[in-house]
Structures are given as structure tokens and as C-alpha cells.
Amino acid sequence: MSDAAEACALCGRPLGRRAERHHVVPKSQGGRETVPLHPICHRAIHAAAGNKELARIYPTLDALRAHPEIAAFLRWIAGKPPDFHAPTRRPRR
Image (cartoon, rainbow, N blue to C red; front, side):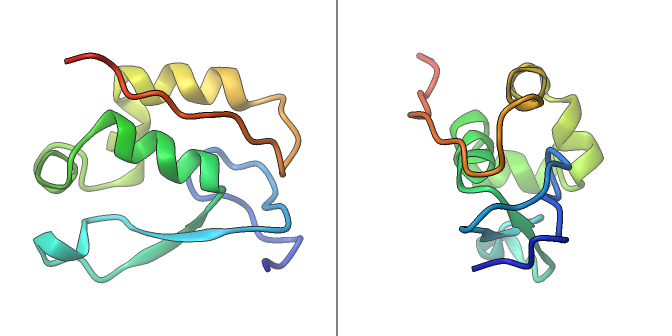
């Protein structure tokens, strides 16, 4: 359960009934800082980049928001309600 006044660190929308904690730099890569995210935002991050890529290329939320897949996701999710959920698809690589 999350505080309704708290916002998602990725998309900025208010958090809904469920929130997840995300290591900005993955824990497996030495990260300690965590931020609150919507579950759908958390899944979008991990669908777009692996842990090593997150640590090396996208070690900040601003850098992550510039990732082309995340930028497109953020445009799409902007008008959705806080508890919105949809399947997250991994791109074919």
C-alpha cells in the first residue's frame, strides 16, 4: 500500500493502491537507492533494459527516461489512472 500523495519516480503520476520499490542502479550491480514505482512502470523498465545496461548506461532516472522505449511508454501512460494495468511486452531482440 502506498501513500496517495506519493508520486511514481518514473512517470510522476500519483501512486495507486500498489507500489513497488526499484533499485535505480540494480542491487546486483552495487546499487542501494530505491524509489517507488507503479508496477507497470517497474515492468516497463525491466522489459527495456537488463541490469548491466541499467547500471552502465541508465544509472539515473533522467537517463532512463531518455531511453527510446521508456520515452514512448511515458507518453502512452501519461493519461492513465494510477492503478491502470496492462500486460508488458518485451521487444524482440
